[in-house]
Amino acid sequence: MKEITIKDKKFAVSIPESYIQGEVKKLAERISQDLEGKNPLFLGVLNGSFMFAADLFRDISIPAQISFVKLASYEGTLSTGVIKEVIGLSENVTGRCIVIVEDIIDSGLTMQRLLENLGTRNPAEIHICTLLLKPENLKADLDVEYVALQIPNDFIVGYGLDYDGWGRNSRDIYTVVDD
Ligand code: IMP
Ligand code: MG
Image 1: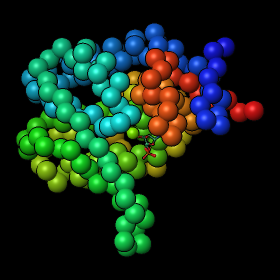
Image 2: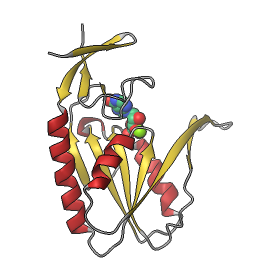
Image 3: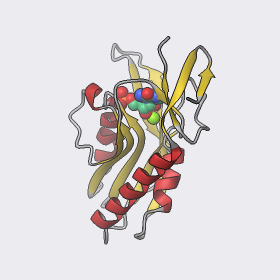
């Protein structure tokens, strides 16, 4: 089994590149069918979704646009803890069909924050698309319409996802190994 070490953790391949590619292609075909005639605007959430968004978008066969946003975390001055602000959205989303492209939905709180923010900008519709979903951990009430892969509640890296900024440049997805 191919193992890698990132900082203090060991990881082993859990989802090989070929399997990821197959599921991403199927998802792109489904989205293309569902959203035909809607000229969707895909919004990739940086940094984690960059690889998935590139592969997915290549296989979208209907007229579509893509842009990227980032959620910047900062400590609030009130007692609300960490606040996530949406930055980088320069497109006018009013009346548009939006597809949010995430790397992973874990608790779903990041996605919830993004939905709240986009909702105030009057899009016609918002669809959620994620490479990975950890269903056991989901706390927010979300309609996650497009999921490439469902995974157990273990920490993973690769294919854009990171451990403390490292590991994004792997074609396969790796899961942390307990030792
Ligand atoms: P949520 O707000 O709990 O859904 O968390 C979503 C964010 O947490 C993702 O966009 C990732 O940046 C990060 N995340 C959650 N699980 C993992 C993981 O297993 N590996 C790497 N990042 C993760
Ligand atoms: Mg992310």
